[in-house]
Image (cartoon, rainbow, N blue to C red; front, side, top):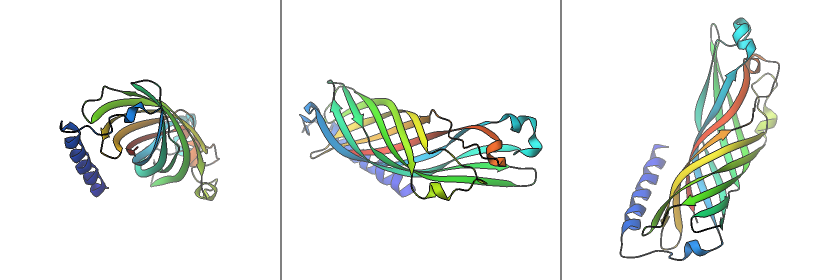
Length: 228
């Protein structure tokens, strides 16, 4: 993870220096296209936002004494379909496969236990992108929108009713900021995106892990590297 971060930082510095060099303008008519495509690679830190149940408050002997969500790393792969709406606005459809691992630690009277949920989601974010004026070979942007996701893969079926389980559909509010850097042959865009789940993912199984909670929603911070 550390080596990847150093590689990304080095690449960003090199491209940023080139973007500010006034000697050339790369892809001068790129943003005039109505539609263009690309792909995206991302790393993320994802966890749950939890809310304890009334049983947790009224019957502490029958529930956990403390519940602590933990953020753990994952990654994403996807495609980019970009539609030009205006000089400063784009509509983006981003079909993505997200690999997530989310954990919650339960503290009991004499022990503690961690419940981890690894999941693979097929996601379709729909984002509106606002771009600043282009300066040389770079421009800043912000974006926001919604993301629907459905869980896929065999790990979903392997979870037991005695463990903490979540529902397989999520709907999130996504917001982000990034920079378009115009290279000679493609556009490179590092982007930071925040995703906040709007649905309760908790599966109400009759076990101590579920009964300690009334709500679980997803929270994810991602770094995306977009190539268009």
